[in-house]
Length: 274
Ligand code: C2E
Ligand code: CA
Ligand code: CA
Ligand code: CA
Image (cartoon, rainbow, N blue to C red; front, top):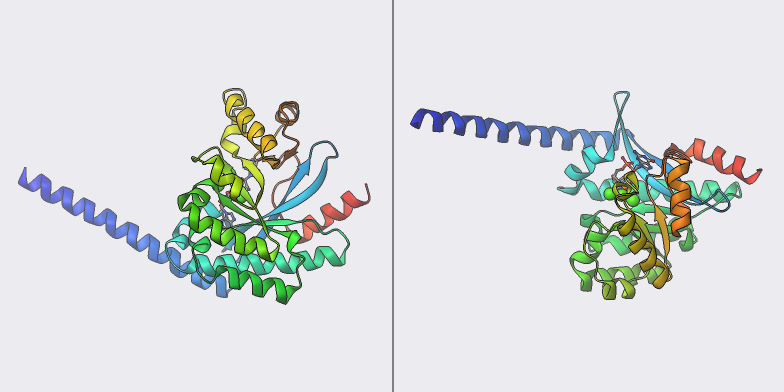
C-alpha cells in the first residue's frame, strides 16, 4: 500500500509538472506570438432578421501559429492568468479601432463590439487605456461596444457599476454576453449602461428544450427596452423560430462565420450595393 501511495504521488507530481510546463510553454508562445504578429482579429456580423443586414460586428481574436489557427478558447484562459491578457486586449482594441477607420473611409462603418475579459475589466488602468485609444484613433464612441459575460458583470456589482459608468461617460455601451448562464439580479442589471443581451449559443443549439429560458430572456429584454441577440444561429429554421419568439437580431454561421478584416470589408461593401 505504501508503494502504491508513492506511485500515486509520483504520477500526481508528473501531471502537475506537465501542466505547469504546458502553461509556461503557452505563455512563452503567446509573448513571442504578440511580438511576431501571429495574432489576428476576425469579425463576425450581427444581423437584423427583418432586413437581413448587418447591424454591428463582434471582434474575435485568433492565433495563427505555424500555419495553424488556434481558437481563443485554448489560449485566452491561460493569458487570463497572467498580464498577457492585457496585451492581447490592447492588441484587439487597437486592431478594432484601426478597422473602424477603414470602414469609415469606405462609408460602411457599423459598431464593433470587443470582448472584455474579467481581468481586463478589473485592471484599474482600463478606462484610461480606452480613453487614450478613442482620442488617438478619433473613434466615434457609439461605434465601440464592449461585451462582458453575465458572470463578470454580476461578480462585484458595485465595482461593475462604477467602471461601466466611467466608460459610459466616454460614450461606450455594454452587451451582456452568455446571458442566462449566470445569475443576474435584474435590479442591478437595470442600473447598468447595457443596451444588449446576448443569448448564449448553448441555448440556441437546442431551441426546443430551451424555449422557456429563451422566451424569458426575450421578455426581460423587452421589459427593460434592451436589444437581444441570439448567438450561434446556423439554420433558417432557428432563425424563423427566434423571429417568431420576438428575437429580431442574430449572429451565427447561417449568415457568416467570423472573417478577416479584408473579407468583412468586402461583405459590407457588397451589402451596401444590394
Ligand atoms: P463568445 O464571446 O461567446 O463568442 C462566440 C463564439 O461562438 C465565437 O467563438 C464564435 O466564432 C462562435 N460562433 C459564432 N457563431 C457560431 C455558429 O453559428 N456556430 C458555431 N459553432 N460557433 C459560432 P470563438 O471565436 O472561438 O471565441 C470563443 C470565446 O473566446 C468567445 O466566446 C470569447 O469568450 C472569447 N474571445 C474571443 N475573442 C476574444 C478577445 O478578443 N478577447 C477576449 N477577452 N475573449 C475573446
Ligand atoms: Ca462575445
Ligand atoms: Ca462565452
Ligand atoms: Ca457565448
